[in-house]
Length: 365
Image (cartoon, rainbow, N blue to C red; front, side, top):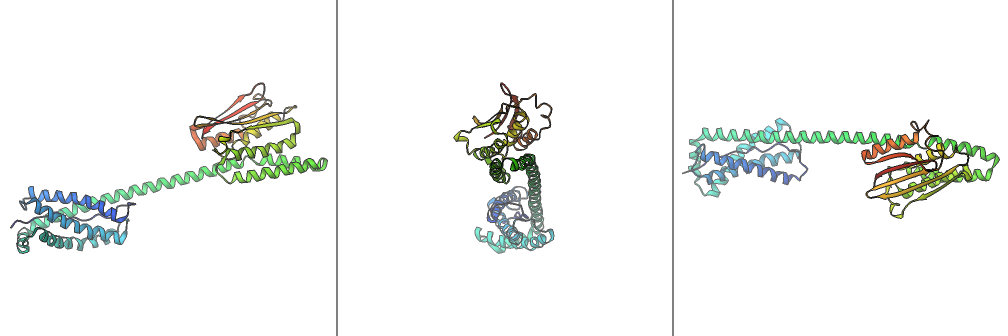
């Protein structure tokens, strides 16, 4: 009677995987089947334990599949996706291997229709080779899956560290952006309050109008300061409130116009991105000019880019040369664009004709 020496399967420890556990078990079964086929080939053509490859294969598959269910299934029931502790896992492994061997042999005998007594006699005669080969197969397959589990766990740890580092970097960037955004408001607000204080005594109606514009402006900025993005329509509304406030201060010396195409109204931009440029145009260009000037704010689409322009007719680049390198508004805009878009955004200041400055921002839509 020909019977078989067979390959024994020691199931894997935990392999971190986000698949449902039954699918993980099915994946492991595919890997184990490859080992079992290799074991049957070695038993048949190297060790010459039996001349029948089919018998060796059936024994190997029965024992290996049962070992997978006992060890890997037991591991999943106890530890789920996680890596099991070493000694508890060994405690699971020790009884599972002989149980899989005994039950696997019995199942293979039934499937092949062999005589159990003859199989037992054959295995008893070749007990040394059977035990040696089974133990070796157990060690090799268990080591393979254990190392695979450790590697997968290491990959998961590295991925978690990268995600944590990215989250910390994002929080730092958000904090810096909020700091930059917070730099926009204070000095303009203090100047306005000082003007308001002076107007209350000499021109109460104008002071009341300025207070109304200030309230409108503060409402708009409060909404913008709580968000990391806004629509162009909201950004232009904020500028309208700001310039309306400046108009009360400067009277006929200031005029302004907006050009916002309807199809760009819902385009998203960082909040309060244009206000520093408008404020810069007034502070360094129009306010020092005796006759004042005009501000044009325009949005245009250029393919997949958005062009935003703030053009004034103030004193121009030469008058601002002394402060252009340290201007909070210009530096603020450059820093925010760099942090948010990197090389995908651009910012430039060029002379306007016949006088003034053109500030041009280009950023992805």
